[in-house]
Image (cartoon, rainbow, N blue to C red; front, side, top):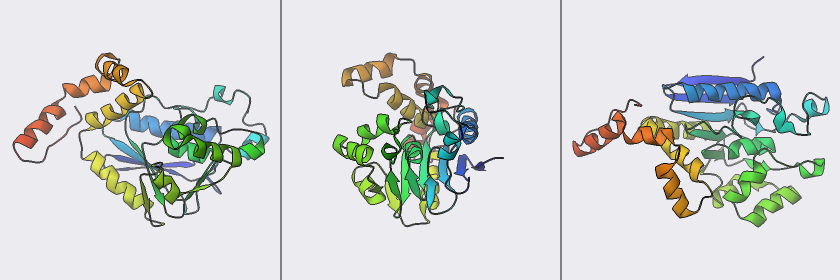
Length: 265
């Protein structure tokens, strides 16, 4: 049974989590998500994706704790389990996905659900959305991305408050810290994400992918090393972009005062 729905809308792949009641993710659902994002990665006709959840209350509650308690998932060295392409939920360790992913948060993002959102490139959240990391009272930690990513996005002590005290953060506060790009009225998350996705899909895809590839490669490097790695490192998409037809087309269109026609090559 599939709990991950995919819809192609032009050059945009829409991925919807649809597993009653809270979109809790077990190993099979994680593999399904991995296959969806592999489709995005490998299909040259797809230039970006939107990730959202079915319903209005919960985006995802993260790990399926019932499956964990039943022994279907292991806690010890959990990362050694085959969660499929891209690690947990297909995104948290998807180091080869250079195409942008927009998260349209339609509801509560808790635990691993929050970590999935942190793995996306852009986040649009409804004004009713809250974020939380409730692992500590359970005797576990949010080690599928929150421990690694959250302190790099918001002040360290605020991240520690969420880790240690389990307090929730509203979408408005998340936007204040820059964790969320845009807050919209409840029910308008997907519409807003589609507007951004269409804008991305109208741009040169190799340039978009190069931005993500370079950013991932130089993250946390000192500035001088970041410049050097960008110019000398193993960044195939970036190198391809520099000599692409799209790069020439973009410049020519600007000079000729017309709209560019990008082909992804």
